[in-house]
Length: 245
Picture 1 (cartoon, one colour):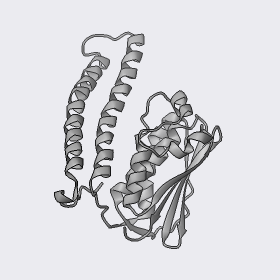
Picture 2 (cartoon, helix red, strand yellow; picture 1 turned 90 degrees about the horizontal axis):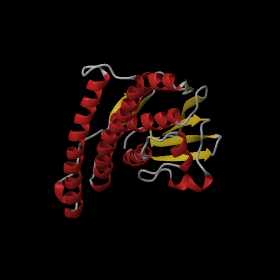
Picture 3 (tube, helix red, strand yellow; picture 1 turned 180 degrees about the vertical axis):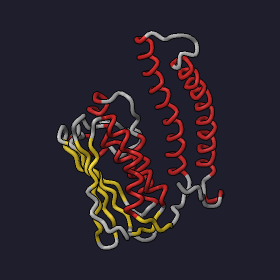
Picture 4 (cartoon, helix red, strand yellow; picture 1 turned 135 degrees about the vertical axis):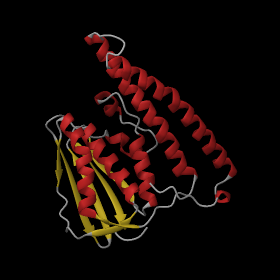
C-alpha cells in the first residue's frame, strides 16, 4: 500500500490529533498482545513442560483470539488513516495474469485447510497489463477471496472471474456459502460490521476487511459491490479502471 500522504496542512488539525491518538493506542495495544502471543507459543512448544490435550485446545483458541486482536489493532489504525488522510494510489504497470497467480498461491493453503476449492475462471490474455496500485489491489482481492473461503463450508467452491469492460476491469468472487440476510446487505460494507449469520458460523472476525477494501477501491477510482442471498452464497465485485487512477 502506498505510504504517500499529501502535505500535513491538508489534514485537519482534528483529524491529525485523532490519527496520532490511534497510532499511539495501536502501538500500545500491539506490544502486550505480541508478548502474550510469544508466551502462548512457548507453552504450546512444551518448553515449560508437557501440556495436556485439553489445555492445548484452550491455548490454541487463546492464540487465535490474540492474533485476531493484533490484526484488529493494525486495521483500526489503517482504516482511520485512509479515512482521515489523503493517501494517494500509485501508478504501476502490472502483468495481471502473473499478479493473480501469486494471489491464488498465497490463498491456496487457507482454502485447502477449509476444504474449499478455489476456481480461477479469469479468461484474460497473458499479455494483459493494468496500471494501478499493486499493493492496494492485492489487499482488496485477498480480502474478498479470504471472506469467500471463510464463509464457505467444506466441499464448496469459490469462483474467481475477471471481465474487461470498456477500459474497466470487473473482478468477481462468487461463493455458495452462508450468504447475507436481506435486511443486512446494505450494512455489510460498513465499518466493522458482521452479518448475524456470519457471527454464528464463525465466532472470530471483525468485519474490518470489507470496509478497508471499499475505501481502497475508492482510491483506485472504483468500487466494491455485492449480491447475496442468505444460505445461497454471495458475489462480490470490484470495478476499477484498467489504466490510471
